[in-house]
Length: 292
Image 1: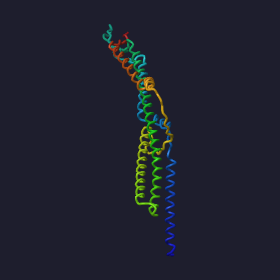
Image 2 (image 1 turned 60 degrees about the vertical axis):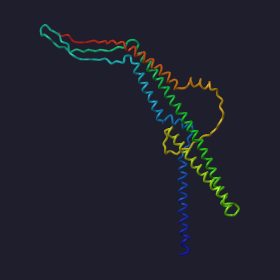
Image 3 (image 1 turned 90 degrees about the vertical axis):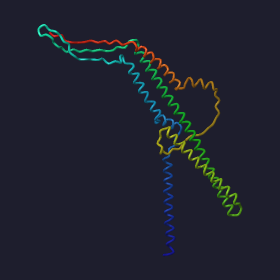
Image 4 (image 1 turned 180 degrees about the vertical axis):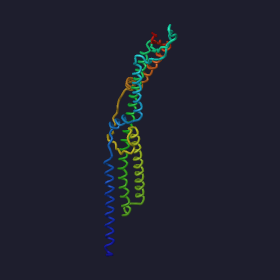
């Protein structure tokens, strides 16, 4: 019995280690299964749907549309209805008070409604251009962040490969030193090189994780969601005339369209303000019953 006890204890420890190893493998596989692959098109779509800045800019469209709807009213003023009494003098009973109703309505003149509609339309065009510019800017930021993350992902993989190779070289140098074929200097140099590659690998993983966090912030994704980037990096030269780029920018940039629409809106608002100097007439009428 005393001879079998150590063997039994060794088998129990082996089973415990096997169980822990299996559990670690299951956890690792589960983590990999939950990791989602994010492509560039998916990142842009998520950003346009979830980014708070773009959503806030889009809400201005509702306000601008409501402003235009109000400007198209035939008359922006509500009628005023007042009730009271009219005093009549009757020959037989003397002074008699009869109920009376007075209604009045202010009417715009001088083309105020047309200028108000023009100002609201220019404001709506400006807001639409601002929304397009916010979406354009966000799309550019997502593309830059995505390709930066993709580059850091590839760099991290390269650092890991170098770390693996340096570890093998370090182990080989240690083995050569133990057999007497190598020197202590060679073993130390390989160990230093391996430590440097490990530091590069840790730094590469840190930069890659930071890039993923920045991309999640732009796309509005959950910070705890596990993702990996899917795509390819390619570099090819592009020959474009700078004058052509300037001409395309002046013709298509939405922020420039927003500036032009704002200038037109201010001009229409100035014209409307000048026409408001003339007072609007008020049409009123009174109804009362004459005593019989």
